[in-house]
Amino acid sequence: MLCNVLIVVLTVHFVRSDVAPQLAPKLTLHHGKEIPSLALGTWLGNNTKGRVEPQSSEVEAAVSTAIDLGYRHIDTAFAYKVEDQAGRAVNKKIKEGAVKREDLFITTKLWNDRHAQAAVVPALRESLDKLQLEYVDLYLIHWPVGQFGNQSYDYTDYLETWRGMLEAKELGLARSIGVSNFNQQQIDRIIAAGLEAPEVLQVEINLNLQQPSLLAYCKQKNIVVMGYTPFGSLFYSKAREDAPPPRVDDAALVEVARKYNKTVTQVTLRYLLDLGIIPIPKALKPDHIAQNFNIFDFSLSQDDKDLLKSYDKGYRTIPQLKWLDHPYYPFEKAVV
Ligand SMILES: NC(=O)c1ccc[n+]([C@@H]2O[C@H](COP(=O)([O-])OP(=O)(O)OC[C@H]3O[C@@H](n4cnc5c(N)ncnc54)[C@H](OP(=O)(O)O)[C@@H]3O)[C@@H](O)[C@H]2O)c1
Ligand SMILES: *[C@@H]1O[C@H](CO)[C@@H](O)[C@H](O)[C@H]1NC(C)=O
Ligand SMILES: *[C@@H]1O[C@H](CO)[C@@H](O)[C@H](O)[C@H]1NC(C)=O
Ligand SMILES: *[C@@H]1O[C@H](CO)[C@@H](O)[C@H](O)[C@H]1NC(C)=O
Image (tube, rainbow, N blue to C red):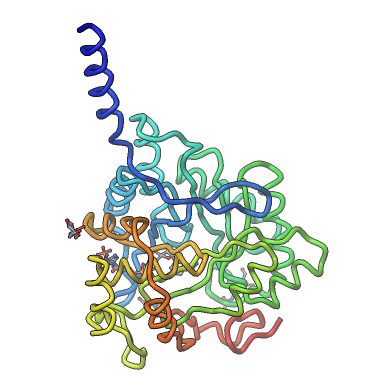
């Protein structure tokens, strides 16, 4: 009898503490640290009227919701002007006991106007102040292209910037360091200079831009890839006139999604995950945040993967053509 009561009590206790959310699988970085394979994006993006400026707390709410749902990796940047919001949510969740700092993986980025070697550590300290954190898990050079505050070009060699990143890591302010929007030749140049290789490359990856050769290169160099703008041109609200298909109502995609009882966005994220990369879907709406995390309980058939592969057209949604004449412009017209 006593034994039965005990079992009931233990069972109830177990069920109550079992509300802990399921987490994303992890990948391992070059130096052994683990990185969650799905990140919440925090750039508010552009709508048809141009850049969306942050309000006071929409990103804070999204990050809180995401952590409750099991997200452990948050992608932000100085340039997004939301590090303060992300930091408030993260610190509140730690204070509440919902998560520990070491369970979270926080990524932020160095902006183009801090490319001088001596400017990197102070820039990171500024980000850490906004985030109210002692360290970030990952610090990335946002672009290889340098600019001064007045937008004119700064031609500082990104090898200098990388030396500043190495100092930040040495000081323990960034546990791991990497680059974003660098091309293969630019990464090779860092390695050829005898400097420690980036542990992560963050670049645009979506159905229209799958980057098979860049992914093969990174795999060979043991560089983990984070894929930004995972939904590419799926949504009519964001797709440019010249963007190739598919849109979110594409008949073939809708059919695949129906088969797995998933949405087109979930099928897309699952496919990107299967490429071995870390997708970074951004969402403010709680329903979107939840949907985008609910992708670990199904797998796509080879036929469906083949269909998704066929949408790869090498089409970029963020070509940053305004920097085309900078010597370190990274895409298609690459100059090392
Ligand atoms: N390193 C870089 O240079 C760079 C460049 C671009 C982006 N990034 C990173 O990558 C992240 C993602 O890229 P992104 O923001 O350009 O685009 P994205 O994540 O591909 O798309 C975001 C849009 O998709 C909507 N959405 C999200 N989930 C949805 C769902 N399940 N169903 C329907 N709509 C959904 C969002 O709506 P709601 O917000 O209304 O929910 C938002 O309008 C950024 O936030 C940033 O962290 C990095
Ligand atoms: C976003 O909009 C701003 C103008 O508000 C523009 O300067 C910028 O180039 C746009 N970025 C992208 C990636 O389209
Ligand atoms: C922009 O700023 C840089 C660095 O401070 C300066 O050297 C340059 O002359 C400025 N350019 C313009 C057009 O104001
Ligand atoms: C389909 O997915 C929805 C939303 O996740 C869920 O509520 C429903 O139970 C699922 N249906 C089946 C048949 O699995």
